[in-house]
Amino acid sequence: MRRIILIFILAIACVLAASSAHADKTRIVAATSDLGYFASQIGGELVEVDVIASGNRDVHYIEVLPSYMLKVRRAHVYLKVGLELDLWSQPIIDGSRNGGLKVIDCSEGIAPLEVPTFKADARYGDLHQFGNPHYWLSPDNVPAICNNIIGALIHVDPANAARYEANREAYLARLNSRIAEWETLKRELSGIGFVAYHNSWPYFCQYFGCHVVDFVEEFAGVAPSPSHVAHLIEHIKIDNIPVVASQPFHDKRLPKLVSEKTGCRAIILPTSVGGVPGTETYEDLIDFITKSLIEAAKGA
Ligand SMILES: [Zn+2]
Image (tube, rainbow, N blue to C red; front, side, top):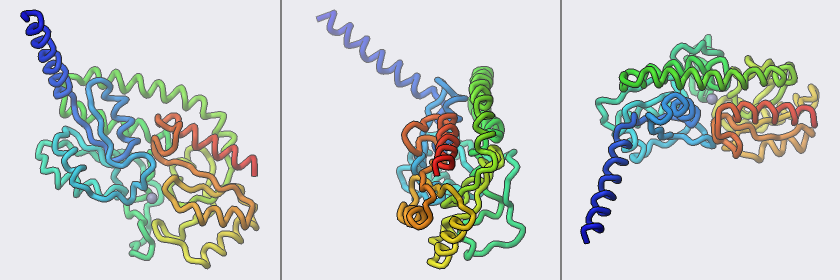
């Protein structure tokens, strides 16, 4: 009997120890899977990361749910994409009523591309007044994103600053070794033109030297008109454009139609970590995008 009681006490002690270790962690809620990935690289064992928009979701349109507010209520840090991409983050943060939450805009320190020089109205769809918000797709922007994240972590958990710094150094070293490998892909991608469903690619293209020559969407976030689609088909035929790339959540019918009418290849390119199987890390995501584009452009 004494033995049973002892085992019972030990079991309770284990549960308590485990839950207090859990409670000690810095809890991060990231708006997207990409920011969540970077946060877990820097935070390692010291953090618990939750993500609002998984990699196969359209980050422009996320419904604000009470369950997200509950997640944020017990968090220490919230990571926003910024540049107006995740406008839904603010109502989630407000609804969480978490006065101690450290909110970080991960676009701080990024040089935005395509900042409109005119006042865009509703006709231009989700054109963003501070510039194109898909900045994480350039590996050049990752150090700035990591800088923002580590700033937040050290703010809420200064005792572990050295460990966060060491994790960041180790991660950036891993990223740099992949960047060295991407130099070959850069040469292969350089000069390739493709049609994109949505304007998610300026940072990626600036880095890899490829370019988007036309869009399936006439205006960002707005369904294209039949005349725009006819125009697009003509454009692809005349310039012999090899690829039309959509994201996992886009309507497949239009790219399929365009592909059938022109012979260009319709492919799916994810824009976030976990968007398709095999893209569970940022490095694998970039690898997947570059290799898919090269393969499709060559095969067409
Ligand atoms: Zn967009």
